[in-house]
Image (tube, rainbow, N blue to C red; front, side, top):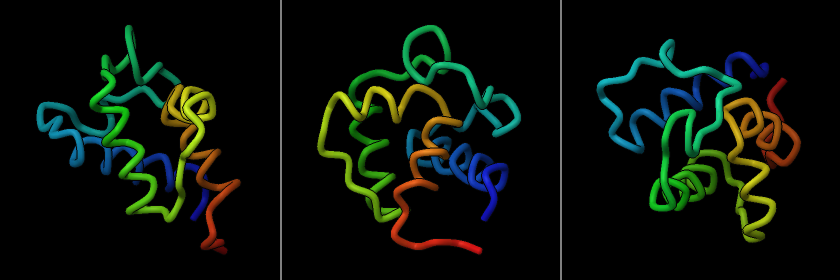
Length: 90
């Protein structure tokens, strides 16, 4: 899976996981902040994103400081998944 496919998949997973039914994946800016001014997520959403990474991508986030960098935007999540994923896609 290339980065663009992963980004699309992440957008769909986030919409589904966080129950953002009023958004379409096209509405989410890949480089916008996920928290605060961008998508406007909060700390509860952050916990759900951690679970999403572990459940859907087999990646465990244990360091809170690392989490801040990972969840900066959809793109940073995709880059982290590609660098850490135990399942390498051709």
